[in-house]
Image (tube, rainbow, N blue to C red; front, side, top):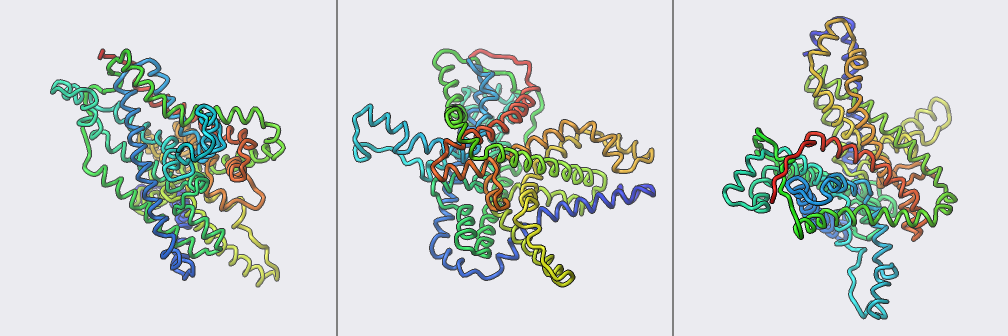
Length: 557
């Protein structure tokens, strides 16, 4: 391997890279190992949970995943097919606008729709005034705080995962496949189900899996809507029952759900490989006119309005009215805490991802490659499970430090790791490292190995190769990694609630706390900042996706 053929003086650099990769992987896997160890201990609560709430937690989690999975496939695939294969008024705007709901966290949409649709909200008030109804006995209105309400909210905010990946897949498909279906008498939508969707299914399955991982990670929506799922159960057992072992056992069951989801996604993509050689379908679309064009625009506009425009409009209205109250509630401190945390996390994740990706490229041994794969497992683990495992591991480390300090110094320093910013940042980095790693690995894959080989032949050490050869060419990938991790860290709620130091609040935790106390209006300005943090990276991402299809050829339909 590369390490074996390295000249003297550079073996130390490779050894440092190997050690760095193994340490980074160990830090990510540490919470998972702690959960497994703690789950093996006895818990008085677990037998009771298995007899009482466990079946309900499992059923609600499965129903939520099924409802959101079906909804995001319908919304994401339908929207992607419309903007790729059809041309209608507003088509150009819809291409990037359909991704905007991803910038709005689900818990914000839950707070807003509860405010709008509950009995005392403006929608039901208007209906009572319009039809002269006196009370709830005179009419039926669906309860927003319910399992179907949670499905609706999460689907509106998570369908862009499927939309973005399905759109890329539809754009990359060979135009000859669709033309052949047309020659055989298939109209556009039958051709979609017979040809386009099966070919794009690997991308659709990957996008659906990402959306469902977010469903498993969600706490704000299910807690606010009083829908007991495994994530909500972990919080209840950990914080209300004070049972660490029971929380660990629930977290382990949640991990099983995640692993089954990954397995199903792999099975859905198995043996589905297609040759897409030839002219791409991107840019070749049927022109819609009249009512068909209006219907296509409405179908694309509806999820954008419900998932982005309406929530942002409500936030703007509340922020304009209650901005002074927001400032009095410590908004600037929360904004500083959020920016500080997200900055530290994004910089650390990007640095670790550089070390991991570069170590795998230079070393290439099975050990290093395995360490890199382990380091990327964090995103597949729900935040609540990571937080439980990390707290247990750091509490154990604090105990060792205090025991050693008492023996040597006669005094205990207290909690140095758990309940500190270190724990919070560690949890965020463990969860979002995979995002930075994916971006930087894709950037490294575009750099020819001959360039680093030439630099190493000239005597450059690995660190110098990285600094002088790779980093200048990886600026875009590193910036993308920083942006993605920064945005996700700003929005993260369940892990932050469990790991934050005492008295430390971010925009996400403060917004959730105010909404739980029926004071959401006073947190609207902070919630608006959360949304704004996610818009720019999304627009840049969609613009990058549009680059290959700048020239279009339109067919009339």
